[in-house]
Image 1 (spheres, rainbow, N blue to C red):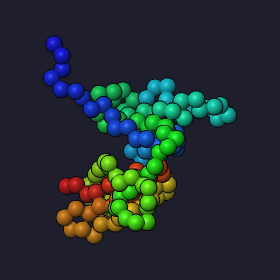
Image 2: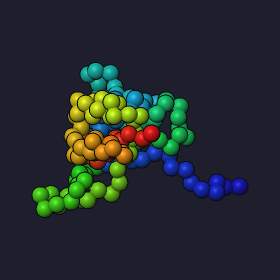
Image 3: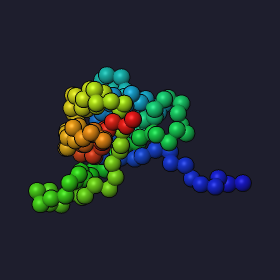
Length: 150
């Protein structure tokens, strides 16, 4: 018998440099590389890091559905969070990742971490009483949100 429905294994992000983007999300989320995708020892060529890398929430969490993969694309154009005339030729966003924290203090802590890791803040709605949030762009320009979820 076949499965009744397919399973979403991971979200794949196109980017110019998979290792750079994978390292950003590995540090931000505390994920681990899929076995074999880890960075090479210092001084060795990064043969896997230029094409396709996979991160998982835990080393053996193959079927969690929360994995992230990073695919090299030499023609990658960053998406636009808010369309406007100042970004001609850029593609409007197609999707974004949502991440949650428990309280406003944690939200501010994560904002500082994102910026320290090389992300960019696109929108600050941290003073919203119902759903405080920040919208960021990762180093490749993909938008993502971190918000307070009760």
